[in-house]
Length: 413
Image (cartoon, rainbow, N blue to C red; front, side, top):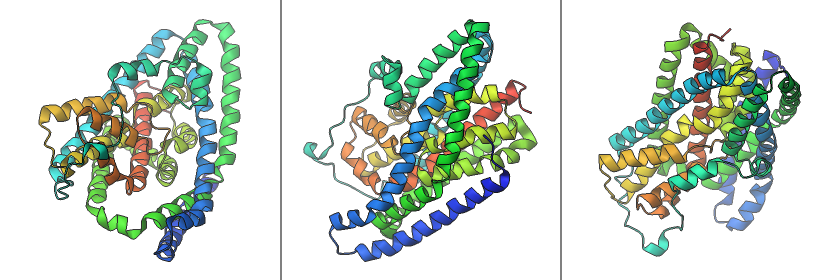
């Protein structure tokens, strides 16, 4: 599927206009809602929330089959298990390095700024803490492997879909000429799904308008004032992370770094607006191809990135977990914080497809380290605003990773 740059720029403009209009209407509705029953307010906002919900459901409808088809084709087209191992090794090495940098950055910044230290919250009674089982290493590892591919597709378990796709792709490549029939069929299906994506993306401005209106109308400007320090420090952290990613990209692709960022600006904006890096996946797939990345490498690296390379989300999870500990006056020594970092690195995989799924991972981590899970309530009001930033950074991180692996494979046109 192809779209002209003019059409692409128009969609970007419409999304920006929709964001501004949604914020404006949200402020007006927030003033109107003052003193009214919450149930009545929710009824007024229902049509706005519905726009965003429908758009995200349409995207979710597309992502699992798109990951399956593109990853299988990407693996099978490498031609041999040796090639898959070579590219996969480079990709996973980059992802692990990126994960550690993101998590460590979040840990360092929250310790430097101490955003929760001024809250002085009393420890809640045991009954006040939410019930949340901690995530054990064994449970996480067994959950990676699907008992049913159909079930994994139905539940949008992207990590399980990735595992099945890797096996399927390697087996298809091993079949030789017979496997070419499967590759051509799945390649055609991927093109059909990308065409569907073009239709779905036309609704993005409406979804953005509805989502922004609902968030601002419910939370109001007060949420920005109350948590302005936390929000500002987190977004400053994202800027530092962006600088690190830009430098990492420059080390490998030099003068083409600026061109890469121009190509991915629209997918990053879509992720920011919808609070989901998943919604940007189809568009990102196209833009990386236009940038010059080899289709075979993109269709292999990018789906893997959506399960293993969540730079923005991982930085947020250490930042938010330690913020909650600070709010209750709980001191965690350096060794405990490093242990938390490693747990978050393990449990953060496969969450890119779900808006605000970081809260679930944080809840499990809090339980593991005996931090009151009721502290999650501190984040609920501002999480949509934070989710936008971390989702767009996930897109940037995966784009840089894909471009670098292409360069390392001498397949960047």
